[in-house]
Image 1 (cartoon, one colour):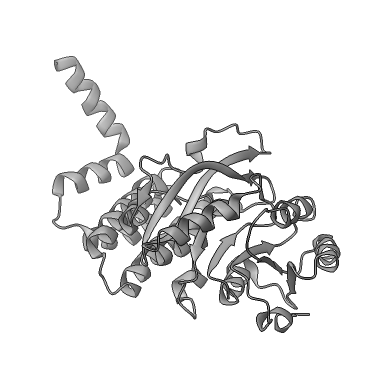
Image 2 (cartoon, rainbow, N blue to C red; image 1 turned 60 degrees about the vertical axis):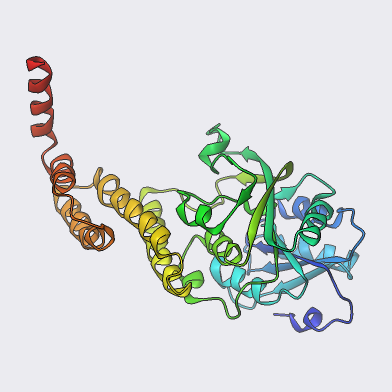
Length: 332
């Protein structure tokens, strides 16, 4: 059942709402919950868990913690699976506190003062709408990738919405974020449709103020086989949806950041048009190229004939380019 009514209109005033979406996190959710209820603060906070009809024992574990900590742990048991976006949207809609954090059921916090540090900063700096920290990566797939494979390196400690629009990936590790209760209600359609919910939230909050990077390591981001599919098809679909999301976000913001969005969209469309075609057969390659070429022209300030010819050559006549390249090298 969905028991949201049990906590939305409580007499208790919480300063922070911690949102935890859960789906098939039986292996991890206890550690995630304990890392939150163990936070040391001088203010009240609550943990709101959206349990999205898991097929494992996640719900039973959550129920045990809810019974043990009735004033701190508030589960929402959905009657039907809402999916990651639907569950996340639901949790964002029930934020009542001044500040909110997100910790998915397979991540966890490692700094017991995380909430206190972030609240202290935001209360002292009203012109900032969110803050975040460093994160530790636990890669259970054995990839052993460097930190910046997952998140970009932070070059400065104060960021604006321009940084979020122009970043090639999500800047903030989700389990480290804290933001003010400034999300629009209802959430715009582009949040529901995209897979990049973290980027959507960062954009909407960054529109309301500056962002502070705090150089502490407060949380663990876990990369494991139960996460989002990393197949080529899934990655391509995610990229297409992100392009759509940026276009709709530009409109949502009333085109106030039009130049920044156009720059980012042009870059993303080039990537999708070229790198997204590399492993395709000729027919699929032509379809992908033509599907993205119109948007390439839309976001180009001027038609660059040399660039178009180069991309066409790389995609459809690579052997010719190699021959020309070898000939040029010999002549030099």
